[in-house]
Length: 115
Image (tube, rainbow, N blue to C red; front, side):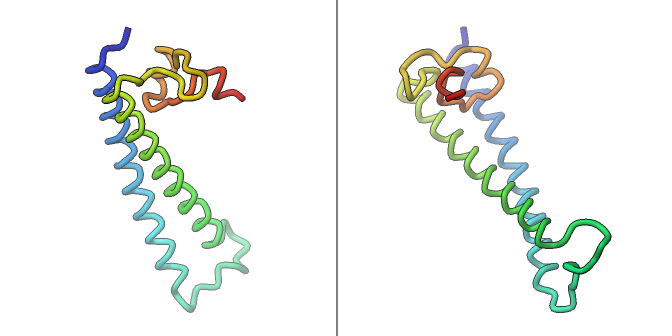
């Protein structure tokens, strides 16, 4: 059985990992933004590799996704603080130890998540 200390340690580790990945993704997004603002860049007609638009779409999507995951992490910390961590927010059943070990910020049990 996971203790609150174990859960908090996992959530803290997840948050640190997400923050580091977000910082990297934001730097990549800034790099692509800078390259896109270069008036001489005509990569749309370059048959070699991806375009800056594709790179922008990928990096921006990653930034958005990581920010959402950080929001989920903060919500999980709030559930831990109010005593509802590990309880499915949809059905009220247990989220499950294995699921929480794999994704500490999981808010849904596996049945509700698969719906």
